[in-house]
Length: 365
Ligand SMILES: *Cc1c(COP(=O)(O)O)cnc(C)c1O
Image (cartoon, rainbow, N blue to C red; front, side, top):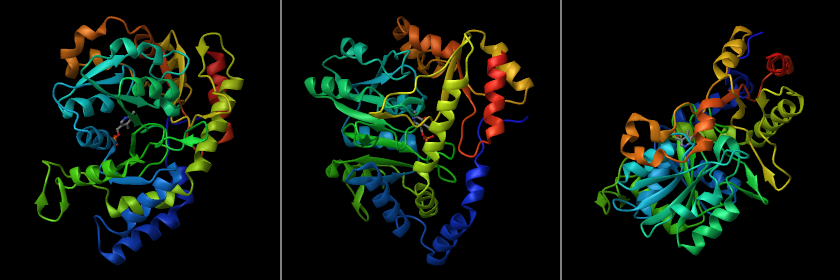
């Protein structure tokens, strides 16, 4: 049986008419950037997150970068980042000229190890980027406490965790400002590139909007050397349609994840933990750890099951970060994730047969 790693077709097919409607609405208005669709989506996504402000951006990387710019973080400043994350988190720091300082992850949660942050704080540290990796909230209580003690900003990289919750609050309001990506494969995905900044800090939101609009609050008056990073009307209209289904799709992801964790019984495979009640994981990714990874991936592939690795090369080991090599000394958890992680197929619209087939093949390995 064929099980692709990810398929968008099942969810898009279901809402095809609504997506077509969104397209026609924008075409009828003939207004493509910074219009009513943007405004509506921003308002609705802010409300969904429980925040006062949302500012659409061109993509998730820009959302992080614009937050850093608006906070005035730049050359000479240090920003703490998890060692295990998608490279965009770190590229945003580099883009503004600040220095990323890597902290290892926790093997229980895969997110940044809050116990290892303090030792990396210096007088240059300005912010911590907490990544809700794979759809699981980072240890925000400890991170925020630490940030408060040292007067640091807490920036959420929520690109993989739309709708995830901690103590009754959604991502977007768990720190000072949050960056979302709506890359098509994310839990809430556009039909192209898109992103957003979500925050309760209205002044910051205004600055982010200005930075992403050529540094301008007022047409042809430029107060910052900003850039062009805005949310298209078309993408905003599609996102407004898809936002209505986000909770349903996240629930489906959680159901599949629970099924995997319950039924995968193979001593060679370590499944992710499903967090307790006060925390809602949205399983953007279902990560397992396996020692004989190459063999495992190949075996699954022969049985029609596609998997993925998030992420095979640590950022400090990437050519792009050769200048950070000296930081490579003590990242045992990140190293292990890089060596052993395999992401199993998980997406809304997966059939029962596909789910059972994955479980059977993983158990037979
Ligand atoms: C996808 C992703 C991003 C970047 O989002 P883009 O929209 O692709 O720029 C940033 N951080 C994490 C953790 C991601 O998974």
